[in-house]
Image (cartoon, rainbow, N blue to C red; front, top):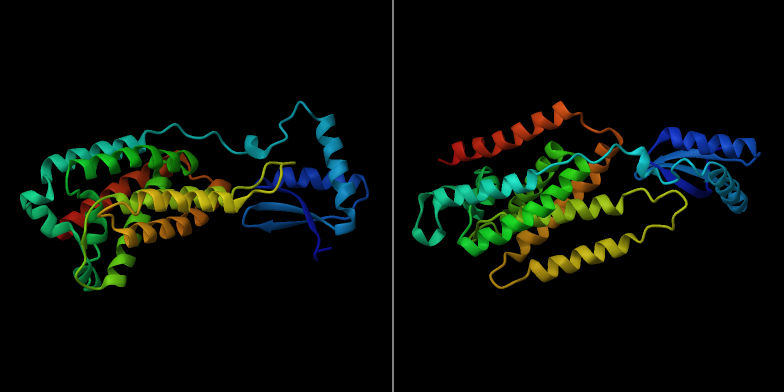
Length: 289
């Protein structure tokens, strides 16, 4: 059977879904499994939903010694300080470039100049993320990335998390450039900061609900993220459009990142991704200078 019905439980683990299916089969309750974006859904006819939930609840109670929530099915979060390392690298690079007011050649070569990006200098979408106009600008972004990037890496691993935030920042800069096309110049990692916010929001929205829990209020997560964007992303002299595009790019990438939860990248793969992300920034600067 594979038609309309009611999802009584959702899990990222096929093994857990099969276990529940066996329970319903033993009770003679019609059911089928369906793979969705948020995991494997156990579907039953609408008129059998109440009895299915009651049967599964009884099964959970009989097996109370085993974890009911599927958080146990996920591998433990890897310990990481990726965000702090990136923040320190930004501080170190600022010591080389100095502030924009000093007329440093780094800003001429690497700023997100909309006309030049549209003209083909794509590397500026990356190099601009590493430049900061002044110490307060640097400090705010460094502190934000230390927390937000680390949170993304906790969820997806250092390599995947680093790449998603880098792509969100670069993507936000690219979209901003094509929106303005000319007469727009910006620097700073804030586009990547809001990209990280978008990634985390998307990961929460598509996170499978805990077994037996209430339905996720995804709109609360979205509203909270938009409120943060409005509070921090629209301050005086802020590049509002870049922040918005960074957030949207991060959201799209975060939604795709749910696949990493189902098929985690091994440690060696994460390490290669970290190295390649660093190499991408170096290559971008090589092209710039």
